[in-house]
Picture (cartoon, rainbow, N blue to C red):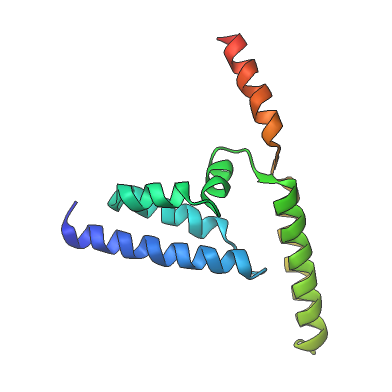
Length: 138
């Protein structure tokens, strides 16, 4: 890979990481797609930053659980959904004056909540049981 392309991929990885961090804080902005994008760009450009991202104590396990299909923990789901609904309720009550704007916010909240509830609920104790099942099958 050329040096310019590597720098571009690394810069894009950092930009995606920044947007992912904002997505963790802001309820309407998704975190997962940006963090997965950052992992992709870092894996292509910088093994050091890729290791840093996946080893990060805040979102390393979040990325790995999502990528492996384990989903989100119950705590992550509850906090995310509660934050989403509180933020949207405050926005609808204070910043949106038209009925269709409030309806749009409601539709977004319902869709995001549905998506989160359909994700598997990650239970760390269940992972040990699954590993034992795999070992006994092989």
